[in-house]
Length: 252
Image (tube, rainbow, N blue to C red; front, top):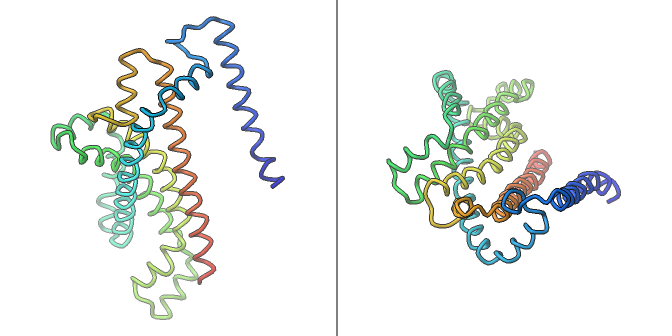
């Protein structure tokens, strides 16, 4: 407990100091609220908009979780297929990298034209930002299998599928979870972008409305919710990693 508190208090104190300096600077220099609201104004607006924000946050969470799960699954499937079929990896891996050079926000109008304003274009947007870190991290982990263990299993007559599921995949789990944690934070961003391009609820939609009204304080509240969602999702994946990666070696 002492060691945990020792690692937590420095960033905690830094955040408190930052908020105090922010509050003091806004009061000292008489900065207009529409340009930079004080933390106290943001907290007051968050409390007054709690019910409305809860409805929009609920929609964003639902969209994020569905898109994150789909993006992670697509990333893992791509990694496994390209790892097991080296020819496909040499042919398609450069295309995967090129696909990430296209800004997601630039593809959004095309997705709307092709798939309309329903759920599908929003999910595709989230999948596009989530699958790549998972696929790259998983492929990297699958190539780092212990060579001695690999030779031992081959000499023992293990089939390709047995080597993959019992050796390569368990060894790749730390890398896989690294990619999933990155995708978890990206998924919230993808959901916000998806709601920008066409939605009638969600934090992204709420931000579009408040931007038009110059409600900077409400935009800050929305940003705080996005940060909290990203952090919560990251921590949940980190907890899952701790449980799974510790459990598999013990079972072997």
